[in-house]
Image (cartoon, rainbow, N blue to C red; front, side, top):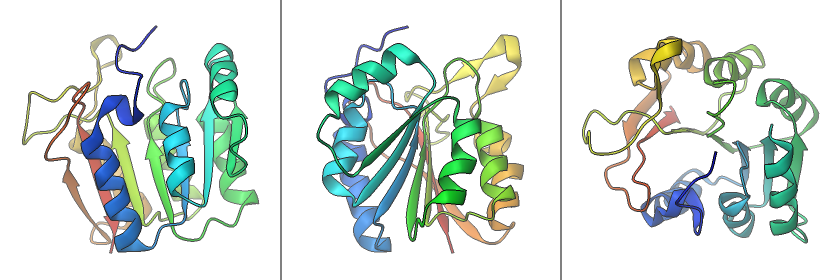
Length: 193
């Protein structure tokens, strides 16, 4: 599997870059958890803008490539393995403070619902939770993940019960990205009230 839009963060989406920086300022976010390191392009960008970044990648080849790109980034903790195995470790072992969780590990296992369950089970209510590759009902030209053979479509309705388990039904607000560049992928943003 290869990705055409790998020259800049967030699949070459500068709108996502600007939005993450705005969220950092608005919610005083210092730390980021990223699932799905891939080649580390977004991770490197995150490391330049946040105090600490924890990232996890299941594919050994991608893990090696990201290691070369992230060499010298002392504020990045890279973990090799499924996010369903590494997320509990990150949450349990580290003092995260205000955290932004960026869920982008959608290849191979489709661990998204398990990742959300882990956040709920560990009582982690991120200041901001961003799920990439979501169907944006406000702009259907944005790409999103869909796996018909697994009866999976990345929609808000699909993840809502899991988000409710993390924050409570009235404990969050949500919205989708309004603009996109590069690969033009939809993103769901969930904000802790």
